[in-house]
Length: 312
Ligand code: NAD
Ligand code: UDP
Image (tube, rainbow, N blue to C red; front, side):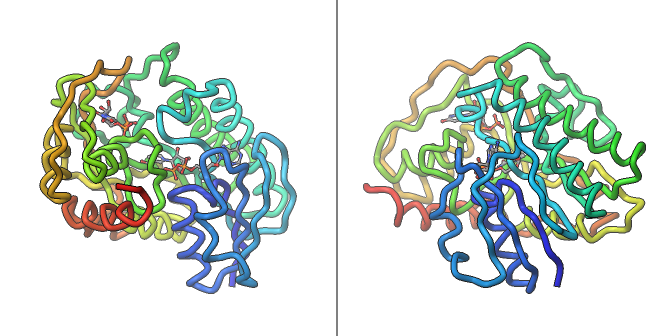
């Protein structure tokens, strides 16, 4: 049994990770300031003696004796991370420093939930880990992109300078149950709009692409990454290489929900990446991992979930 700290553990991905670790018999401390997470996401774990929730902001240091740390604390939807951009950067940078310091003190292994946003609006397709990216450092997405890039730098510097055992994963668009209905990201927006018979909001022409990964596949990859040999730090891409345009996604959601919703076209947000597809050769080789859940199957799960949670 390991003692594992999960920051951002009350969020969408974090709550699935906490559940997986508890199922494996580990003790989990979930640190969260509940900015976008909720106690409801972890309600099924409350009362479990292996689980402890601590209301805490990672901008400030935290002390605990742990074997492993997963750092997920950071709002992930553009709507939420742009709400207070300065706070987003502080969360990424100070959060990384505080948790790296804790890892140093306790000799814990530490994993950073980084992102495909590291690649910005990519000039290389599909994206390989060796690509340094095309990120606007002063745009409205920069608080998130540059915060995450700086966190990767910090992780590598603590590894080189202090010998910390670190792991970096770059997560591509992930969806699944426990996303907030008002999360703002495309899958949750489209499913909720379709279920409620509201217009489906396509930003721009809808020709831009994303590669959507179901949350269970991601959790499997994350846990495998934490368990790799100490000399493998990553970064490693974790995503589903099947790429779809936003229009294709809208059509699938309308078909699967049997909805009468119409498409409406809204302005494309600034710096919105045109395409996204992970090259997962490294993850296959080092983790023996690849996604197993196709988009239609994953959409089916999230549609069933939202049917219960949103009024129609
Ligand atoms: P989420 O918003 O549901 O979860 C983030 C969690 O972090 C929330 O519970 C929130 O309350 C918490 N948090 C935010 N700021 C905090 C702070 N200062 N102190 C403590 N807790 C704080 O988003 P998610 O989709 O579950 O994303 C989890 C992680 O995965 C994030 O780091 C995100 O950048 C990364 N990621 C997600 C995706 C995706 O598609 N979902 C893609 C790439 C990377
Ligand atoms: N998008 C859209 N309609 C929405 C929400 C998002 O067309 O209601 C688009 C958005 O402009 C982007 C893509 O869908 O091109 C993915 O957006 P999301 O916010 O989910 O993730 P990210 O842009 O961070 O990959």
